[in-house]
Image 1 (cartoon, rainbow, N blue to C red):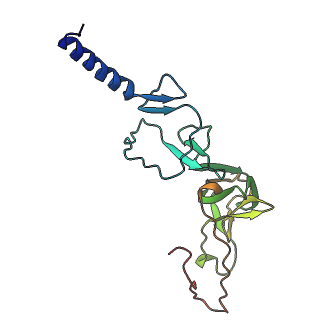
Image 2 (image 1 turned 180 degrees about the horizontal axis):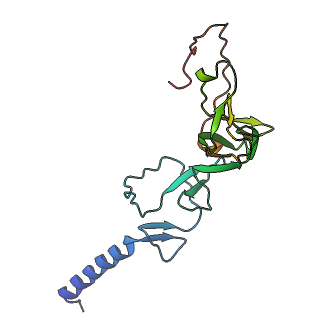
Length: 210
């Protein structure tokens, strides 16, 4: 006995709708896919993978970065997580009561093999006076701060050359802000020696970035 035509049409429509529903979300290793395709497990892409559309980042959104490790694995970095890894770090050091305004050597303990540390600002809170001398009225001083590597860690120096606390009993405070990058996220060039031959000008034989 042949099925009525309307019954065949109903089955066909049901099949199409079911197929579209089932194919709307596909899961590999999971029976409850949350996106059009979800892979619950390892996935290897041997050739190019193109991502065509990105959602716009909003003020309330979470910023994530994907990084490739040396073993070719991919890890995600959530920079909004205060306790997680980040692309860069801002650290403020408050150095209290150095010898007058002089910080000759402060060891941050940060491994120079893994990180780069850059001083981006420095403020000293005490009043200063210029060193005594016949040319004192013509002298001036600006803060000198720098970071350098010693013993495998990053160190800092801070000073007002030719100046010191107006009152020797003042408890001076340096507020030094640093920017710290992981060496995984930047490219380190080798050392370039520049022979000046007692001259005051010079030029690179070739740019390090062209």
